[in-house]
Amino acid sequence: MTEIVICDDDPGDLEHIVHLLKEIFSCCNRDYHIRSFISAAELLETVKKLHIAILDISLGAINGIELGEKVKARCPGAEIIYITSYEQYCMQAINKVHAYSFLCKPVEKKELEKQVLGLLENRSKFNEEDEKVFEKILDSQGKEYPSLKLKLGDIVYFEYIKTTRRAAVIMERETYEYPCVMEKLASELEDHGFIVNCRGNLINLRHVVKVKGYEIYMDNGEILPLSQRRVADFKEKLNQFLNNNI
Image (cartoon, rainbow, N blue to C red; front, side, top):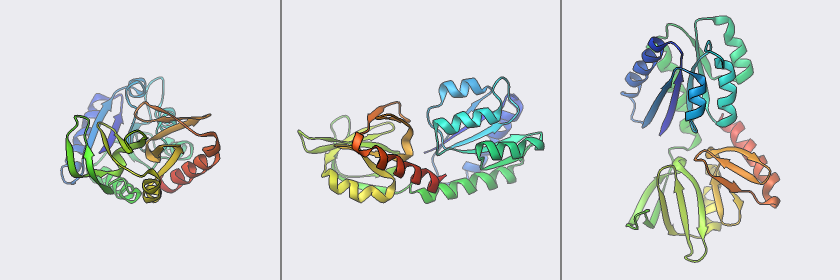
């Protein structure tokens, strides 16, 4: 699911953007979720994960450029589209935050559609919509499915359960278990942005917020361990992933 946030302290402009996005997505066969905010502080308090941020540059105490920097720090893979009435701020936004693009007010549907659909096309190259079939898989209620197809982009990480020789599949909103050989799984998903962070764990780099010492902060709020011997390799692969996919 594509998570989109909009921040504009003008309620009329905010409502206009939300309306345009709903019209644009009504023609796309893609799941999306839109959240709108009139203040940067409220957005930062509420949002833990996002893919696209549409930000007004001229906000209150925290302006749009500062907000963009904070959003990028929290969600490195996020793309930012700025909207503004003042074109002189646009180059500053692009240089400081590496924004995807900017639009001048009043925002026209044709221009917004061009930018958003361009972003969605780029994101489709990141394999977020790739799927994998899991066999003999249990959901969190204990119901078994002969096979179940899951989107790789929605998987936060895998955790091996040694006693049962199964792996927990930690999703954004659900947890599954299935019989698994972790070495085989890690090799299979290496080209899809997954990497081993410690023995028995395989994480999705899309969901990494930051790495601090021997801890990995994930966008679902969990903090996972990072093996000391894997630190250098993990950081190198994370940087490569971000460089290739932002």
